[in-house]
Length: 227
Ligand SMILES: [Fe+2]
Ligand SMILES: [Fe+2]
Image (cartoon, rainbow, N blue to C red; front, side, top):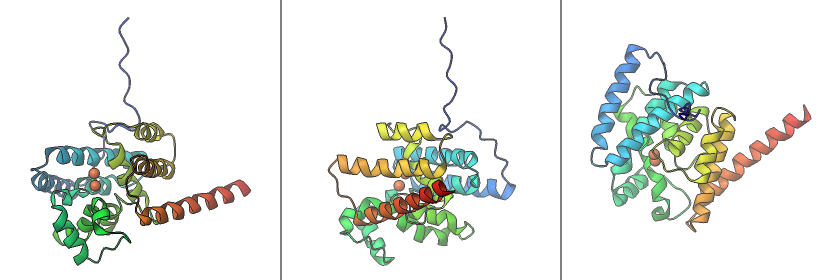
């Protein structure tokens, strides 16, 4: 008997999410995508990842009632500065006063989002600040994660071109079944476990963010168990 073709899993972006964008939104998305393609042209893998994150973020946004236009824009622009050489990125981070409580060389992998979020508003003044906030915290997370921030963070971690570790498989399996907060938490903690298991340097800032979000989740659990 022929094997039944399995339906797309809930985390996977669709070919067409069915979002009806306004003409001005379509124009902006087309312009930003074209400029992202040109910005990342020297790194085809990064470009493919970026386009995949944009589609996944749009999909998650539809699923979790977040603005898909902002999610797609955030996806398209999130790795804009991944083509900037390490020394130059550190120089720009110093220029913007970005301080992560760790040697810059250790923090460098997290800087591209924070730097892009400070540079790009001048190029795209009409893009709302929520998009820059999401981009700024897509590598590090933050104490004040909004739904759009979580959508980008999760999309970056689970987009279909990313090779699936056990943690990524678990996060993917939660999409559509668990709340966005829980899916984000799983992705965030999975990232920390990955760093620890690889014996890599864990930024003190990450521990602070972890403790802050863990405490908030604990408080929420306590309140809901009382009611
Ligand atoms: Fe990134
Ligand atoms: Fe990325």
